[in-house]
Length: 117
Length: 116
Picture (cartoon, rainbow over the protein chains, first blue to last red):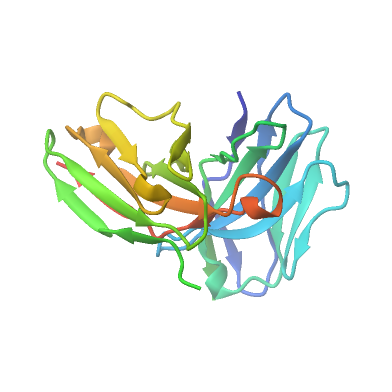
């Protein structure tokens, strides 16, 4: 069974600084997707960034980028120029991509990010 | 475009009572998901529908939880009888399908259930 581990329950960053959130996962599959979701206090999950396992190039979305290390099964999120609105719980998630996969997301336990003004 | 709607937003019940949550997915989305998010944990999939058929309910406690998606649109998740450990946020999500570019899941705001 696949598992996702986030070892940082809480992180803090100064406004305008850069912060990196860590995620490791365990799988025997070769085809899968990895995601970072943001959950603000309103509870609505928002997709931040997505990475296909077959792509060597790391995904980027504006101030958000990932460091995907497939061999090490590591998938970290870097937030540059942190803003107050980035404060939220961040979840790393895994989804299988083999034929017959159901699109189920497997989530880590989350990292609560605080942004200090 | 309207997002995923859920109601109620909050619910407090006593143990052994029953409760129901409602979800209306984004129009045209064939796939609907119910996740349970216990405090301090990530969401866990309870059940996934494709139109009105069940795709995955392997983690649904079927002795007390039930869900239906009549007519392949909105869905209801029911707990009867509730236990203290059912206190959680129940998230509904939907997607066009479950492969390719249509697999992106859109989440609703969730229902926070407290069982006393």
